[in-house]
Figure 1: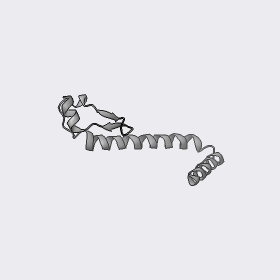
Figure 2: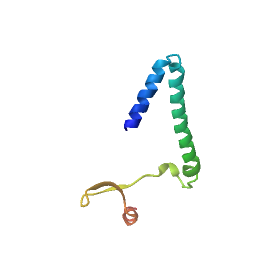
Figure 3: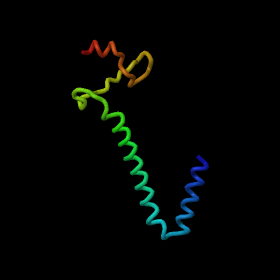
Figure 4: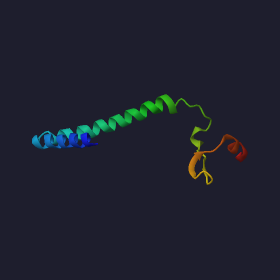
Length: 86
């Protein structure tokens, strides 16, 4: 964490040293972060999500189950319970 803080301080010092560079650098960094997010989602969608072949895939739901005896929340429901609920 200390190295991250020193890197940020160094970056701010460099931007203050060359103020003409700041207006072009900051938007470029934000566009690259947005592009990386968009690219990552596209890869996951194309390789994993789109390949799943479910009938009425838009109606898929998650069924979490709370267990007071184990003091846990949001665990996946056991398959036999889901079959009983049907």
